[in-house]
Length: 188
Image 1 (tube, helix red, strand yellow):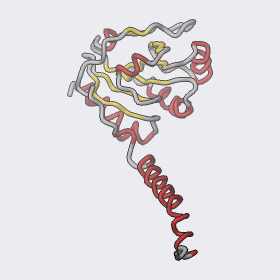
Image 2: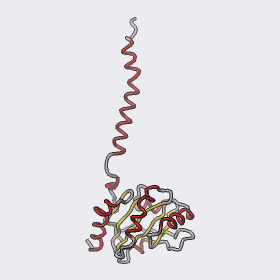
Image 3: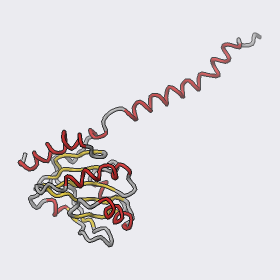
């Protein structure tokens, strides 16, 4: 019998490595392609889920419920956590948005320890009129949250008008969030 040629043997040996590298390349391209803020939400145009969130333990602000979002005032609901680096990045922008009296900002503190949430808000400022503690993340799941941070525009009658996935930026606020707030304020 003839033994396989040395060149052919080396090609066969490299084939699994080449296939693995190709798969890694495909996964990386898919992972980093696309805009995460364009993830679909089945809740757009629908009432917010029924929920009641207790306040962050030891905080001076109240928690809130779905009823608080249907009292006629447009709301931004921001899902955040002290352990979330992008939440730290977007926080100064939320502080600036909180100066606009036309809408309220409410926070859902997801899977966080109360002392860490209080320290986060004490150090960076508190843009929220109410902060609810979602210790186990169940309410965030009801809202369809993929991960923190996420921000929702809620109409005065308690319907989700817009969802932003990921940290807010000056561009996303100017180009997407403010126009959606304006629509909600106009009742569209």
